[in-house]
Length: 228
Ligand SMILES: [Zn+2]
Image 1 (cartoon, rainbow, N blue to C red):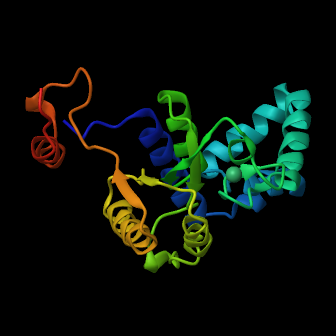
Image 2: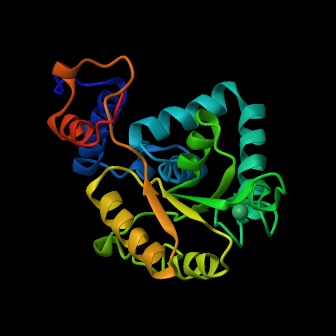
């Protein structure tokens, strides 16, 4: 059953109800005794999944109970935003011009794994024994959102492939419609550079049971079966 609500659905639903209430009656600012508090609530809403009600709860929580924590959070946020940029070779988050993955002499320069986000990179790093290098797209092909080859840094990737060090491009974009379109474009880029491209396998999750797996995944797993 995919219809049951999880905790975050309920939280965002209650945010929506709260917001419709305040839009119908008063603006959030007029409900607060302090303009600074209203500004804080408004600013917290830039976080994903945080609506008006959750932002209000967070703001009251830090003011009532954890001002030290809030000071630390403010400092860390300011520092992170100020100092963390993008690696000039792979575009992942980095405080240096070149990140630790790109700078490491022990990583295989012949393998280049392309991921959509730094979080995906971290997931692969933590779950696999991969010792090659990465390229981070910082998005996926999505023309409606203004994300094309230029925004994904494909010119930088093409330059990297043309250097001749990369032997295999491992395409690890997500198995979504946009992720697949991105994978297709990456495979064309690799072919043009004469580099072998591979794609992460789609399959049955470990511990899963066939009858509960969605048709698309099962069809992919069936098509990609391997010899025993
Ligand atoms: Zn890098």
